[in-house]
Amino acid sequence: MPQTIASLSRQHERDPSVDPRMRTMIDTVLMGSPVARTLGIPLASLAPDHVELEMPFLPTNVTYGSIVHGGVIATLIDITGAAAAASGASAEEVKGGATSSLSIQYLAPAQGAALRAVATVVRRGRRQVVTDVSVYAEAPDEGVLVAKALMSSAMF
Image (cartoon, rainbow, N blue to C red; front, side):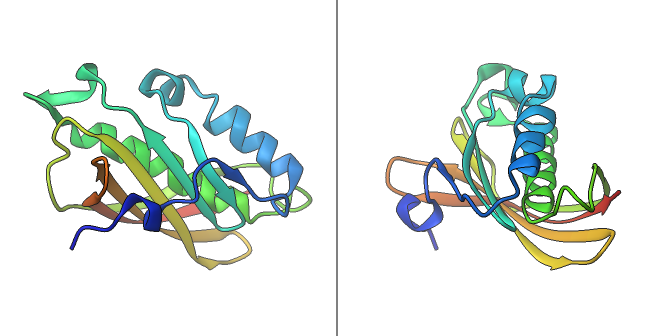
């Protein structure tokens, strides 16, 4: 069932309770990475254990016609999950992280649409963080779920 975009998003919010050093790491390492910049991925919402990213539709990101390539969607999921894992971490304990596993279910084509990825931490351990990531193709008044993922991040 389609959801309204308003129910999916808290647009462009940055929660002050996110460790400022982790927020800087998210901005420079993840959002400032060449791949995130090339795909045009901005940060829409940042809170402890919850991140939302947007990705505009670009004709260079398609696999056929106007369908967004699955690898591009996987990259969006990876960046969003990593940002969520970092968002609730303490810079005193964590200096970095890496994706240790990623399982994606593609549910519908992202046909010529901007995408929104929503990641929420499911479980946070000392060295492993598991996140749930949903990707929506956005229309003016609704979002269609196009992919669902479970991701583990190793924190070091």
